[in-house]
Amino acid sequence: MRLDETLRRAAGLFVELPPEEPKESKAWSVMDAPSPAPKKPVTAPATRTVEQIVRDTPGPNLDEIKPTATSSTPVIDEAGAVNFSSIYALAALPSSPFSAEQVLELLATLPASLPIEAKRATVNVTVNAMAKATGVTSDAIVADASRKLAALTAYAKSYADQATQFITRADAEITALEAEIEQKKRAIDDAKAKQTKMVQACTAESDRLDDVLEFFSLDVHPSKYASNP
Image (tube, rainbow, N blue to C red; front, side):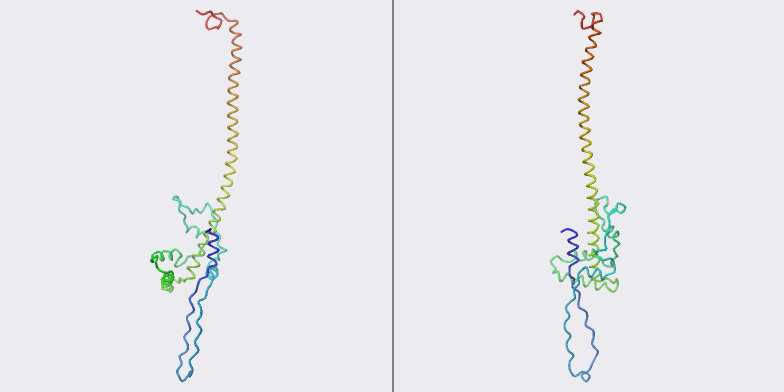
């Protein structure tokens, strides 16, 4: 799946939020309330799209994240590995107390056979345990992953656009150079042909002029008119 398609799909995903805790009712005695209080209806968990969560979380919206590839900020090291942190820095993404990458590391420690609901419960327990100390929330983690996905999508497009422009220019230069090379080859072939013709012509004319010298010279060697010894 292409990056932009992945981002569009991710932005439209629905995230289920835990229901609000019911408020404690005022204490009452049998004398104060002769009849039992009516039961409150069970509230279904609320849902929001990923895009809505990002909008409600401090930081840029998904459509505002547009890092541009520049030669002054290389993101590929000498070994050819991509430094994603550099891309996120270009996008000016806010830091997260518990990043999407840390969630992936946590999930990697869980058994692969563990049901998805159990994995979600484990992550929720971890997030809730860290909430008071770090302020991390599920919303913040969802926003972090979404913004990083948006940054990767925008940067990859910027990089691809620049690479396409470079390739187009390079192809045009190669075509021009190939045409020049062909022209040079034809010029070389023409020069070789003229060289051969010139040497042959000069040799023939030299022979003609030599005949004049031979005619007026003594008939001794090396004259071609000299008698054989």
